[in-house]
Image (cartoon, rainbow, N blue to C red):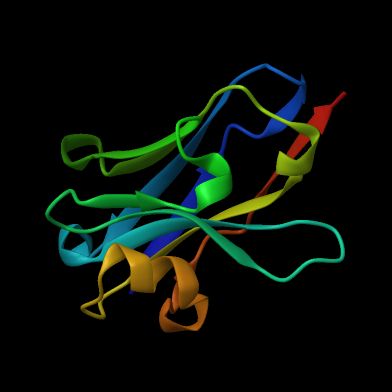
Length: 127
């Protein structure tokens, strides 16, 4: 069983930055693919950034160059650094983990392959 807890959301003005943190616990979670997803009001859940157990990363086009996903294995923590935030980044952000073998591109598009989810953290960007 994998347990994830997000923190770090909040309200920020456009152009600002936030760092989301996801505390991960559970057996062998270091072997899991992890990702950040978001759900904007009235929109479907969207993959934002993914990272494989070997450190490969990928991002949805709308956040490339602005967001960075990383993990600290020693601290059992997943991060999402978000810079140059835009109002359209406003959403509830979730971290998720999956033992399934997949590429980062697959991970971004296959949220239903992730059985473990955090509770979500709200990010609000005002113009």
